[in-house]
Length: 171
Image 1 (cartoon, rainbow, N blue to C red):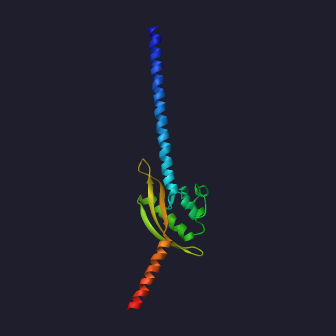
Image 2: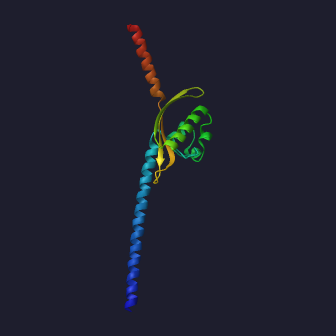
C-alpha cells in the first residue's frame, strides 16, 4: 500500500509540474505573440518603406508603405525576386542588387541617396541598408529602410533658386 501511495504522490507531483510547465509555456507564447504584434504594428504604421531580401534577392518582407510605393501589395512582393518587382527601372534594379550583395559580403550597413528618372518624373530617395545577423553572427538577410524625399528635395532646390535670384538682384 505504501508503495502505491508513493507512486500516486509521484504521479501527482509530476502532473502538477507538467501543468505548471504548460502554463509557463502558454504565458511565454502569449507574450511572444504580443511582442510580434507590437513590432508588426510599428513596421506597418510607418510611412517609410521597409524591405528585407534574402541572398538571392527574393523579398522576405515588405511593409505596406513599400508595397504602396510601387503599387503592389506586400503579398505580391514577398517571395518574388527583386527583378520581377523592379523590372520597370533597370538602372535602379542594378544599383539595388549590388547594394544587397555588398552588404551580404561586407556585413556592414550603408547609407545611400539616389535620384532616379522614371517615365514622367524624377524620384529622390534616401536609404539605410543593413545586414540582418543571426545568432551565429552570419548575415541571413539584408534590410532596407527607404524614404522618398522628392518633395523635400524639390523644396530645397526651389529655395536655392530663389536665393540665387535674390543674390542676382542684390548684386
